[in-house]
Length: 193
Image (cartoon, rainbow, N blue to C red; front, top):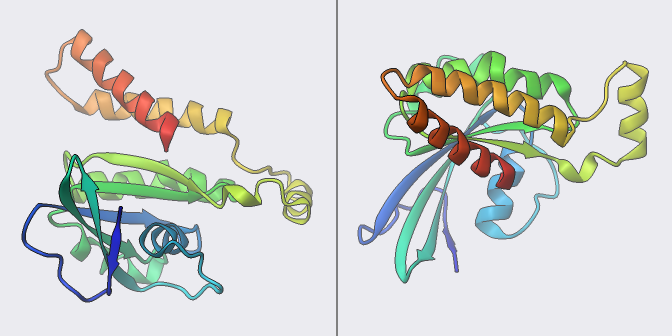
């Protein structure tokens, strides 16, 4: 069971505390993802986020886990401010809009380099948002007119594998069997995100 707290309220001190930072293009679905998870409700309208924090408490194995979920701005105007929210992150969610191939490409070209620069060694999970819009006919026609299509699981799997190889390649000093184990673990995690 989870309990959301007001954005400015501090998490209780007992139990484990985890800082989760959402990163991705502006409008890719980060805020909706956070609000549905924290409040159980989909936002009625979109208003661009500058920076926002939600506190959520989960029970895991009978113990409280306090999540501080930080929603960052993906617009270029905030490139200098965003890194201020990375310190002490325990996990990063790199979000993209499945109806925007450009948003997906930015995971590798923009967001992965940024977070690995500022958050060395922090686990990264790639999350596709707006999956409900993949089958929207109006949107699909608009993409087709521009020679594009929504990001499919197959395309994401190919890029996840490339990103995974890049991550494993940066884990200097690991032996082959350890790298394979790491790759298998990341692959399994990718299948559930």
